[in-house]
Image 1 (cartoon, rainbow, N blue to C red):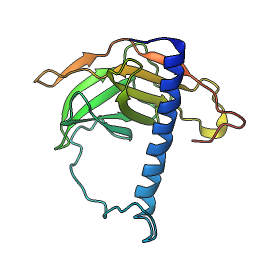
Image 2 (tube, rainbow, N blue to C red):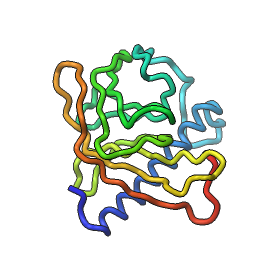
Image 3 (tube, rainbow, N blue to C red):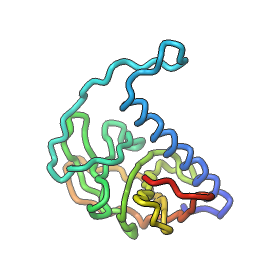
Length: 173
């Protein structure tokens, strides 16, 4: 499902836009609702669930499932293993997915979207770059699994790695 290089580059370009867009949305959430002159209207924040799994202790990425629309996928920031948590809408962990072949150096973001062949995928941004010291930034792509009915431990298909570098100076994130 990895596809050819042109398709992979197009997917990475789209992913970069998704990740940057997600960062912008996070900034909006922190700053509050836009001014009245903005074309976008957001209501006040509201709690929809409380995470119940103590292993999700520094959630850094969150994406709504596509194959599993009743679930959210989440991961911790740096210091955790290469794993994703499948969370239901009440904040309970339904499964823990080990991301096969990935390294979790400083995961910062997560997005769900179509892969190169249209398969619903999860894109994991190992893009943390505190003090601008990293040269090994990467976005991992895995097909989103269909979860069994019972909570369980799962392993993903092997992750496809899309290494990249920012042009010019790398951001400190």
